Length: 619
Image (cartoon, rainbow, N blue to C red; front, side):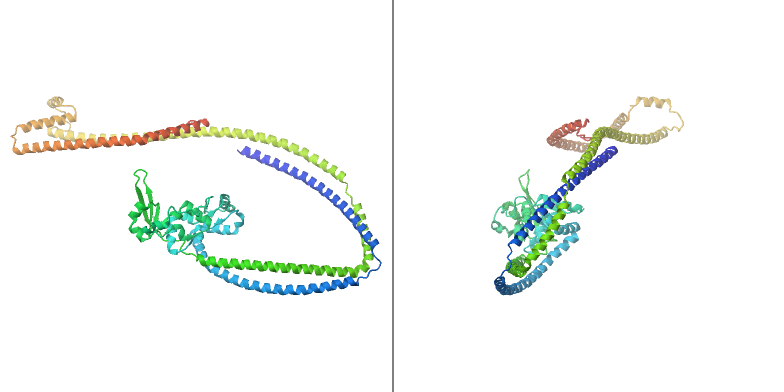
């Protein structure tokens, strides 16, 4: 990898060198073009100078020796007087329009102040947003500074855009719309949303959603609200608030606010009837929210209800009617100001035209007064132009020589570029071969890692088995110790019964008697019970013993019947468990077989082996 990085760096250096050579060639071409343009400009100036000299000579030849200019000067003075009278009228109109604009501006300021008071409520919402969701507030500030970067409309977080018509209804909206969406920005364009989420690489955690491509804001409810009045419903959720079109479209699409009815205490009192008859999915009563679902198994309606949380975001709302009226007045004033600006611009344009005409007349008057000195001026100008013409002819550029020099420089640079390209090709080949070697090493590393994981798994399993064996050994050893202690105690008691000392060997008659007895503990217990029974036969039986016998016999029969009944129930449970297990386990095994087949195919494509199996330690 280090070698690939080094080769890549050398490739970049060669590419940078090639780009530098291209820039040098472009600079040579640019210099040559500038010289050509300079030569063409010189030729144009020479042509233009010749034409000016020719025109002045013609004017000089045709100029009259003496002219009567007074009638023309009198006519110009008369027109200047009329222009001044018209300008005075225009100045008066401009003063009137300026005064009207000042009045309109004062009214506009009053409306803006009132809107500012209404916007203070919006500021309270923004402070709430800033305190709860700092990143969202920072993103909002960024959005307001960069709105020109977006192609389509971008709505601020919903908690700022939604205005409740009645603050008491805010809790319904906040309980229906998730808190994440309440602080989410809403976009009309997916491209705008993606660009917003980048935000100049700011690391802010904010929510953004895209309104549906096809508007849902005007979607109709499944039934008119009048049909639900009998259940205590008074409105659908959408009619309780105002919001921009993209926000309303998203809420109708995602939360179906156009089809969620809001009820009263009457609705709560008859909720069972509402659930059975209305067939609604979401219901709001005065203080509760109900979600209704139809079970896929029983086809019965299942309802869940939760108490409504208190509103946190939408309790401060603006009087939208007053705000809309003020905005309309502001728009009317803006239109009036635009009309006044148009009239003022027209008058100023006319004033400008009059000023221009005034300047033209004064210039004509000046020219008439100066015409007597025109001949001398023309002769002086012609002399100056001849001097300029001689200077231009001396500044000629040899384009053929400049072009040849440029070709020589470009040829030399192209030779250097060819060497750089050859070196770059060698580097690219080395980079490709090194990448192939790297890929092979990665595949080898993957195979070795898989083998390492397999060995680690086997080692872990063997360790668990060893621990289990050690635990079992310790349990057996403890049991052996307990049994040894018990045996010693029993042997001691037996010696005491037989009146033998601890060191005395067992007498021969005892050894003969013990050899006649059974060899296991169970057989000895059975033999002992049999002897006890025989001993009891030597005593006379009384009525209580017989009664106890019959009672225990009857109890044994009852317990036998109870045991049989429980065995039958156990068999039924086992059969049911087997059926349920078969219905569940067989599809699961088929699914795992499909996963195993694809998993094996994927591993075989990487020249590896792998499988997926359902391992069940406890059946």
